[in-house]
Length: 98
Image 1: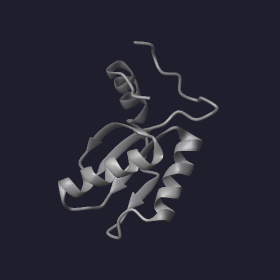
Image 2: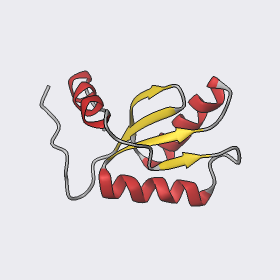
Image 3: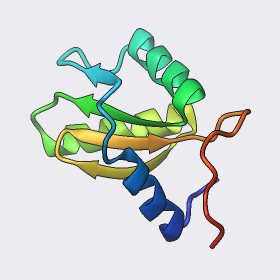
Image 4: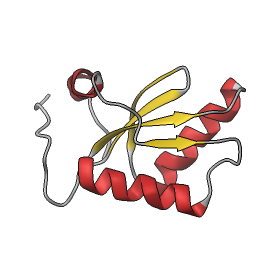
């Protein structure tokens, strides 16, 4: 499921006050880190992930890999922080209609 631009703006507003719940260090995306991201998405639906990679392309590749493996949508990426959204089975965030 892809989110619309209106839904993306709504999620950006909701994510503004959030702190990163998962931090990816220099070791990259391990299975344990990926599992923590999955658990956080199931519990919160909307999370921030901090990626401590110095190269912009490496950060972009990691965000794409996370989204591919978790089924999450990227809301926005700014610097070292990415905001991810994935609807849970018990929906907590009601997205606006287009």
